[in-house]
Length: 170
Image (cartoon, rainbow, N blue to C red; front, side, top):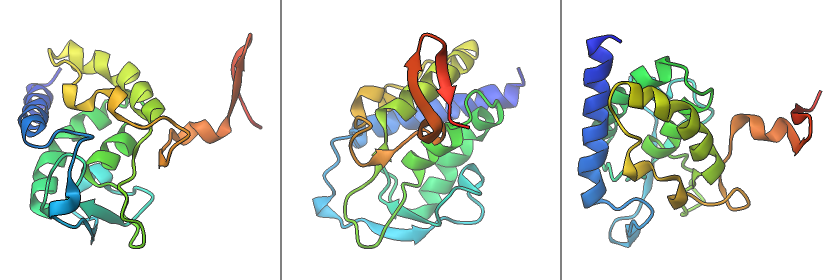
């Protein structure tokens, strides 16, 4: 694999590891600082074309400024480019640029199943480059799918699993 990909993946994992001690994911206390909505900046390639236009700051990774988000999010573009899962971009954007709705103070996290599916497909890609799935992205930290959360893109079209396996609606 290209050395640039390895370097970017290393940088991304270090960023998440350093942020873990400063901002325990899932245990954030936003009472000291009111979250606010900001437009997703055009240079944010990771989330270009995502289904919403406003992101919440501070985000779920503890970034407080758009500049911080831009710097950190760019390190994950190579993983998205590997196309290890169709929802990788959606999952990462839900962390770096969580959807922001003015009338909703609650932060909408990725669903547990979204994390699990992306992890199942992308952790082996990261592992091939010597990087474990970051502890900060431990899927047990995310809400179950019956809560308010960002679901898998394909989950709306999948029927319950049967003997034949997953079936999609026509």
